Image 1 (cartoon, rainbow, N blue to C red):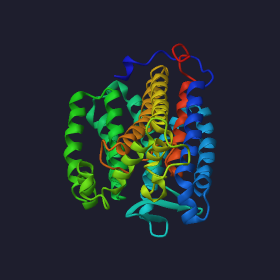
Image 2: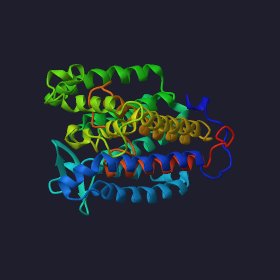
Image 3: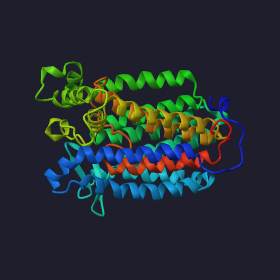
Image 4: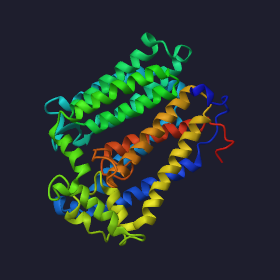
Length: 377
């Protein structure tokens, strides 16, 4: 399927300035929103209102450095190391289970401690899996529907990664990675028969996994009827809705929101968008959603015009990973889907997410250097 969209290779040129501008805006506004959502919590719990800005700021600096590296590395050279990258990632997602190295927070065994800093390997899995799938589907494009040689190996790698992450009590991330992986199978041109088989297998399995944990069932009930337990499981959902309503059209003003001060637990994390909506109103909501939509449009256009099947699939996977995370987060805050643990890229507190997102964007900018410039300017 990808062959229908990709143009002929063009000469390498400068990176896409529109995408760079969007990234600067997203990171800058994201840090501003994070500070506004976290300064009270940081002062209360760590005696430092800048605690989360300092913590995430370090990851952003490292992410920018790695992103610049990935923006300039020849893609053919990078492909030589993809087998090593996927193997290293499979090892890393096991590390949270290692005593003394893994860290358990709120019942989830998702983090490792490296040099005194926490890191979430499942975030790196998003990038590694996209790289691997783009590589394997390009390498075997002439036999894309050969189940034994082309479909089965990436299916196994995806399945192993998804189930390890699920074992960390991280259903949301494992489901999201599977969702994007299936999308990549589809755009790579895998037969609709296999695609429907994947969907038919994944949906009942996901339902079974949801109902094996009490807190997941509670999230479903809370999504359907949050008012049943307004001071318990429905509290955060109702608080997020209150924040959206309080914002009105123009918002209450930057830093003036009240839901983050005890009303909305962990407001700096997955619900930072609710704080932003309260303080900047509908105008701010439209601007942020618009920036992510523009990012998606530019990312997909770069992918379509990249000049090679590998670049197309890689760009598609990266853009989908970032944009669809944002869509899921928006939907959660608006109460359209059950609460998940999926952060808002560039906004939610979490250094691992920001670091890996910037690395992915470095690769997307790299792809843009090979893209046909017509239609991108």
